[in-house]
Each structure stands twice: as C-alpha cells, then as structure tokens.
Image (cartoon, rainbow, N blue to C red):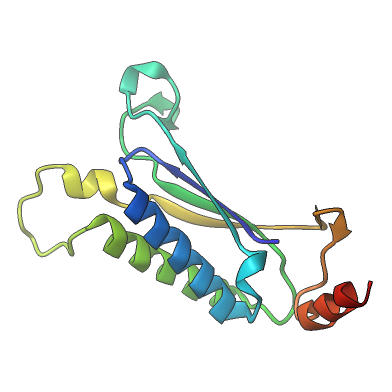
Length: 152
C-alpha cells in the first residue's frame, strides 16, 4: 500500500534503518488508521560524490546530501494537506532523532550535521495499486477489505 523509498547519502546503520522504518510505519498507521502490514519501507544508499554526476541541484552536479524520503500513498478526501504536512514533519523529526541531527543553536558544525539532514519528504498519490495479486482498498475501507479477504 504506501511504499516509502528512503534514498540516502549519509551512512545508516542497521539500527538507524530499523528506527526510521519503525517510525515511518507507526506514524503512517497512527495518522491514517491502517494496519502495519500495509506499510512498506525500502532503503537505497546513494553515493555522495560531486564528480559522478548522480545528484544535481540547480543543474549542477554536487556532493551535497540528497537524503530524501519519497512515498507513494493512497489519498482521499479524508486525508487533508494538513494531515500530510504533519506526517512529513513528524517523519523528519524521527529521521533527525535516528541519525543524530543536532538542533541548530548557532554552534559551529563540522559538516556531519548537514550531511545527515533530510533534504525532503515527498508524497505522491497512487491512482491504483495491486499488491500480492489483489487490488487494494480505498482509504478508510481497509477493515472491510481485510474481512473480505479472510472469507475468500
């Protein structure tokens, strides 16, 4: 159902990935009342080299961090922009906690804080999806759908 793709240039330990995946799952389930088994999270480590031409900003190759979470999600009238904004902010907060991003207090940064920051969280609406050979339910109809699957 929701598929969260976590692309990151900062190294993440197994524990950090687990913490982020758990947080994303918990936050999504709490925000939209869906079972945890619906939430997918995938991590892909990106290289962080200015000269390899894999990350561009303002049409220039750069080595700045490109830590980004992109999610393909089901939308509905019951899920407002404010709901998605809050979820994005909560995900960013949990990312910062997991990787140890320090609050900016005007202190000097050795660069490690900047390289750990999350560049963006993006939600892309899904028109339709099949998972495990089944068409997934509309948002808000998960319980009814799960019950129907048990009867088959």
